[in-house]
Image (cartoon, rainbow, N blue to C red; front, top):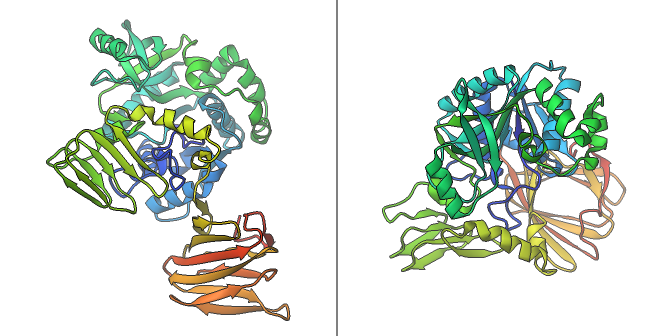
Length: 472
């Protein structure tokens, strides 16, 4: 079995008002591992080999994905990471993965593929693996298996799968109908009926079956992958329709079955769902970061850099980030998307939804701390043994102050010769305009520097690379 992990491009962020954070799959919710890392570990229990796992993500997250995998496996892994050139929802993403499996890995059309989002909580892993094995048997017999979660409450934030309980196939049921997110009254009716399940967004199918159904129900996708190389599919990916697998196939096919799952599951789609799954104190509060609470109950309080102090509040969601402090009433977490839409319509504020202040590179990362008309301040982290490319800037000079570790700096002198310098903690070095330079971490711990750029133009495209080997 092969597994495909959808690691997001334009997915909802838990911190949709802050540029500091990546999509929720890369966040640590309750321990030292992200939802993405936990998804990788779950799927390793299914496949047994990282090479049998495909990860589809946005090109901007490539190096973050690589580093997250390295963190849990303890070494660099040359795994199969597919980079979507543009976001096109789950149906094109799955079609891209299928083409990669066939064209690049030579996978047989009878092979079963399990598709999973990367930002869900699923526990315990042992039960999850058993369910996937059951789904594999069903998929080998030509069914497309969707995983349904036994609902524990009338949830309005999930889609539902209506099962035909009179048409049982092993431990699964034929799908009668898919339903969009309901209002509360409708959700309550679903719960009482006994044959409705939350739609988990996980699927299993054979390559042959999914290709047949794409040809029948989504020819506009099928024609773009049929007898095409993986590279050809990538080149034409922007011509794919922006459509989910539910709309493209699952709502039309007669091969869909739902396999009910009885385990802990959450798509962590709102702050309310985070409150539900995290550990609480004696006052039913969930607190992370710097928090002091007095007479505070039933609240989610997430601190980042500043202290959050609460007195006499109840049933609140409070989230502090470097950009924004959000305060909401519990139960209203789904409305964050409405707030984001308002921000996108505001010319002065829409940047909060478009850009991330932390950017990951193969050598490490940098975080923008402040930016003005003629200056920019960054915190740069270079991993042990890594280096940036040899480069030069026309319009800015740079001051580097080492705050952790030892920096090895290659700097061009007035005679055009490249000289080597070592800069230690609390020491600095100056890089003039139009001067070739390279930053290297020769040590065993991450190197951290503060970079102050000053000049008439401080955008990222003012760079000339002379040796790109370290900065791909």
